[in-house]
Image 1 (spheres, one colour):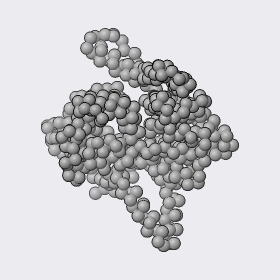
Image 2 (image 1 turned 90 degrees about the horizontal axis):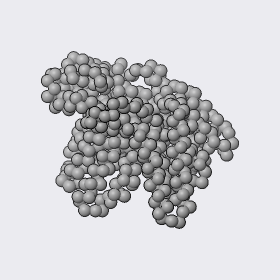
Image 3 (image 1 turned 45 degrees about the vertical axis):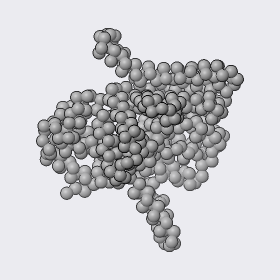
Image 4 (image 1 turned 45 degrees about the horizontal axis):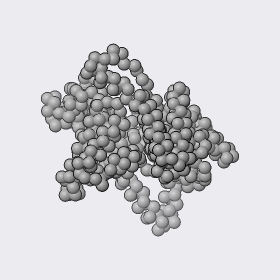
Length: 473
């Protein structure tokens, strides 16, 4: 079950919110826990045991750390947590990848088992590790109730697509939260924005990108130069709109029931350097690797050669976290190289406007590495965008597809900036100067969430419906 499905919207979420707000407040955590476990088990009940088992291990290790006065025992508990959780993550996510590479080099093993990746294991593993490490660091107190820690690790709002919510962010709200009308309105609005972003914009971008650059087919090898550029441009927009949409929906659903999750994206395509891009993109993941990998290794407070080592390890792991394939590792090390370039060569010497162009080009090329697991396809697109694929510059098909989707392209580019937020803020300040304008503004605010929901539902019901296609030259 995904957030952008009609079953989730009209059956699961509707029933969950109705029951949650009708029951006595003392039972609301129980409703949320049952809903979360049911949601997670929808994708495979057997993996619910894994989630509950990892949470039990983390609960026991955290209690062991808090109740022990022996530093050695505390260290053994934190080592045990890392061995158990990272070991399970390595088995389910990377065993097939490692065995496949071993087989390619040495010819053994003869048979590689097909291991199904449990939904959301990367997210809840990192959340539980951060919880136990924070208990070890005395940043948070160990949760005495197992079921409350299970509620934290299984919250359906963010357990499959993030953001990575740290325990310290929600520890007080697990026991005490009182959503106001403003919280519920904001939550509904934020969820509606995310759903519309996913159903209308991200899905439409995906359709265009898949048409121009169909992965796993010969189509990638016959595309023209403008087709490569346009296809990857739509993929670049799609991956941001898709991922940030799920974060919007998670933050919105959390706010509806009183949780205040931190922001996960801050208009990353407005960055003026690669370093700034990563301060704005998937911020919960970037901060996790910063606080639990980079800084413990020594961070930037060591000699330059060790800074290089620390960043290399961090970005190697960042690439691996995204998937069990060499292209993700290359993607992580690609950004490591540019971060090194910025730290030791470019520094702050690049003009602001040029820095933005540079950052967008670096990120754009990076998405090619990320998108194509097949290195032959990746290489073809890389030479294609610089006009060396030998298939010509443009074609009627690409030209037609561009004209059909030009409004979608422009709208999505604008949606990746803070222009809408700035216009909304300016409109509010202007409306405050006049009672009539304020009433009009308030009315527009009231109808925005249901209108966005209606448009999103229409788009989901129509599957490949793209409203922008009707505005073409």
